[in-house]
Length: 186
Image 1 (cartoon, rainbow, N blue to C red):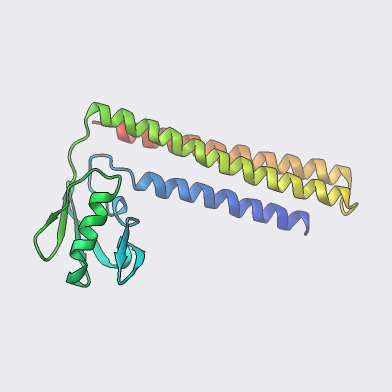
Image 2 (cartoon, rainbow, N blue to C red):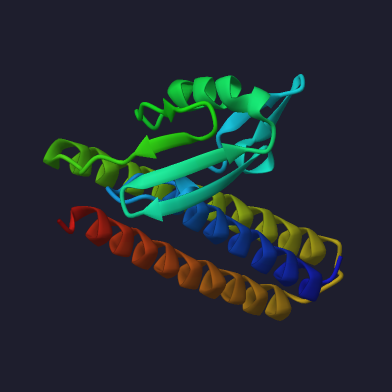
């Protein structure tokens, strides 16, 4: 394994962690409708668990409603049950053709809970970043111990790794601040 491939793997790992954080943030209910709220809910479909977006079309007809139309009407009950069992805390309305979710306005208490959740998600992402950094540092030390690179190359690579980690941590902080402001905005 070369220094370049270690740095490339680190970049991919860090970007995946940041993308995962953005996806998690998109799934937070912040008082307005979004398909991202429900698209990853797991639904039992023909004996297997699948994400909701794989068994139904998800649309947002207005700012307070998410509409879910399954491709097979026999899936309505399973989708409704999956939504009720999810952490959303929303009650689905089933009219036999589509399921509608009405998104209520956020209470002050719910806003505080969501900001805590945002911080928790950001911290989990930072932990994933630290683990990726540690893995890359260990690989660099292993290359040095195997006499494949010099100490100067080891130190400069470790510095590059830390710069990448600092940059991604800054992006995580910015994303968390932006999401928190979005949640607290009335």
